[in-house]
Length: 161
Image 1 (cartoon, rainbow, N blue to C red):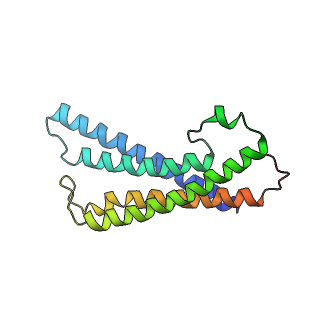
Image 2 (image 1 turned 45 degrees about the vertical axis):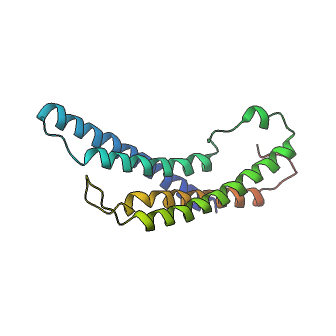
Image 3 (image 1 turned 60 degrees about the vertical axis):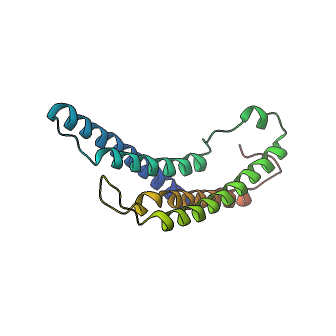
């Protein structure tokens, strides 16, 4: 199971990095084209925006899987380890549920508005709007990995070190 989790973590990191690379490349090319050649790339802002959305979705799941998401550690560190462990379980269950809600809401949004054509790049908006669903799926998978790890760790009632 650890192998699958590591592979998924590497996939998320790679997709996040690639998305940021696309954002940087497209914004750079658009700026050079606009200010050096006075010929703006009409599609550059739209592609950069969609790449940023996908990057955020992949990065959200990656940060959660790594355990580097924003937390209220001042409160969490103040409670005993057994309670921290239960809080961690609650967070993982809530993340699984919220990821599922994100998948469902993203599908509804993409199917209702996905037929609109993107003005700058000429593709159906479905491909930009489905990012919410993709992010939800990634979050659900990450939550499942964390829940499996939670229940398969040898536990003495304390927090994992």
